[in-house]
Length: 356
Image (cartoon, rainbow, N blue to C red; front, side, top):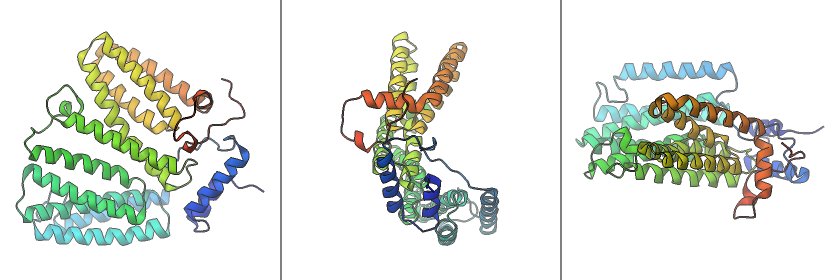
């Protein structure tokens, strides 16, 4: 009898093994095999729900929260409640969400309800933050900065307690909004979509976007290298950080290059996309590649007009090829690369068959 990764995950969910024990066991198994031939392709965990009962509970949580907002007269923008009322009702929401999470996440180990509870906690944090800013008569950009900053702090504490991976996505988003609002409060003009992504526009927002994207990427890589076999929640947290880092980096560079419309900038963009594809293969993160390519497709449709079809066709061919030959390509690339810091902490790449 042999155990596979699903058995080990089930053991963790059933509190038979701890996550560190599971990671050690999987690392030992892979070390003994010296290959990834038995990983069944599920090397980048992504799970939204495990059964329709979880969807059923999520629907119930949505209705519950909607009813609570209707009963108290509060919503994301304050509604009929202000100041003290927002703080009081929002605090009650935080407490109730905390205990619901203890049940559905810690006890029942449910995925979809945990994600919904993260969203509810974030909204509750926004409500309390809005109440505090209304209490002190803060307005405009300062209102947004303090409200979002408070909600982000609540989510950070929530992540420390429950370690729900998607929480880091909303934390990163909250940091981005808070920093942008503080820049506006300091005198910068309210940014447009172009200002957020075009490095050639005046203002600091595009620079902030790409810097925060690089920070998210660095943290994601830290998560990845701490769990190269991807059997713990750190790998899933890394996934969500890659999802937010890729658009921040790729969209900023892509929009900036495409703005010029020159052949040279388009060649540079293609070279950048190729480099990003190789990087995604090296770190073994399809999520990073898909998020970035998705934004480039959207840019191609809106900017290139009649030429968009050929660009999308080429991207589609490339993605299908990468999806079909990912492990083999990765084995060839990693084997041909010289040793570099952290290479031994990346997911294993040995295959019994490497020919394309």
